[in-house]
Amino acid sequence: MGEPAILVEGLTKSYGPVRALRGIDMAVPQGSVLGLLGPNGAGKTTAVRILATLLRPDAGRAVIVGHDVVREPDEVRATIGLTGQYAAVDENLTGRENLELVGRLLHVGRSAARARADELLADFDLVEAGRRPVRTYSGGMRRRLDLAASLVGRPAVLFLDEPTTGLDPRSRVGLWDVIARLVTEGTTILLTTQYLEEADRLADRIAVIDEGSVIAEGTSEELKDRLGEDVVELRLADRSRTEEGLALLRPLAAAEPAPDPETGRLNVPVRHAAGTLAEVVRRLDAAGLEVAELSLHRPSLDDVFLALTGRRAAHEAELETAGDAPERGRRQGRKAA
Ligand SMILES: Nc1ncnc2c1ncn2[C@@H]1O[C@H](COP(=O)(O)OP(=O)(O)O)[C@@H](O)[C@H]1O
Ligand SMILES: [Mg+2]
Image 1: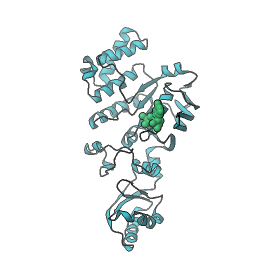
Image 2: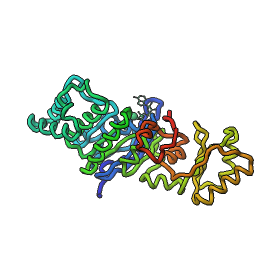
Image 3: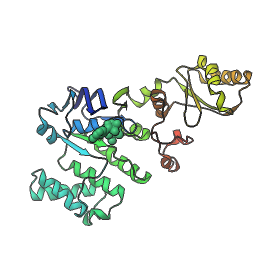
Image 4: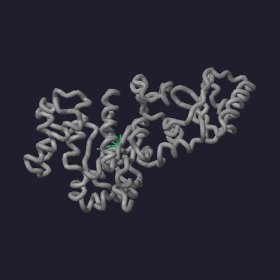
């Protein structure tokens, strides 16, 4: 308990006219994982860069394990590890040489740097690959090496900026396992992601960020509970009558029903599913609105995101085929802009 490992208060940052962060607050307890979930352009990387002392905020403050990022950047850097969306390793060195180099840059002695490199190569399943130049690596191997490189100095706090974006499903799941292991070792992690499954799987708490503001925060279950107990999802045969349908169903909903702008499907959060479902059908039928599809499900983080932002979050169709997201296996959402 005690002081949070990461404390952020009223952080703002603009790039010229672009207001990338509009005053965000966060507190991440030691040893926990905060998932910063938001679409492209939400301000995730800007937040991470400020916390990692790579960018100065315009206002507000951020404190990492007691050190202010603006006033004590050296102390902060000694505490953190950062893994970017783009692997920052030398292509022409082997994986092992890269890790040893990082150790040397951190002023770890030669033999200690070598020992740490061995340990990390083993942990990240890179023992064989460690002998080859990085340019021969697959995307997943690069990310694992990048993550390993950020751990050479045994950071207490780790920033993972979209660690699995662009990876194939198998590599993504592999990296999730590695990250989950770090968590059990007590590392505090701030993980940014566009992927609901990733936040759901790895994060203790999730902050949903959109257009530079945190618009919701809580555990995955808390966020889902906000929408009521269940969601009736339906599609009208005649999409042009969506507004009419919405007007009929609004009185039955526990929260504002959300039409999916892409598919025209309506998500109606309801409290008492069984009774409400029949009433939904009756009302639409009485108005002569034909229902093309109808289903009932527990709200997903996807529903939460849609209700909060009016858009679907990034969606990994590939995960569905990998059988990794049964909850959303039937969805056809596409990546948000
Ligand atoms: N160096 C920059 N110069 C100008 N605008 C930027 C710069 N970096 C990011 N932005 C803008 O700031 C906003 C937030 O970007 P970013 O923090 O990269 O979001 P995310 O990581 O969530 O995709 C976006 O509108 C983006 O276009
Ligand atoms: Mg980013």
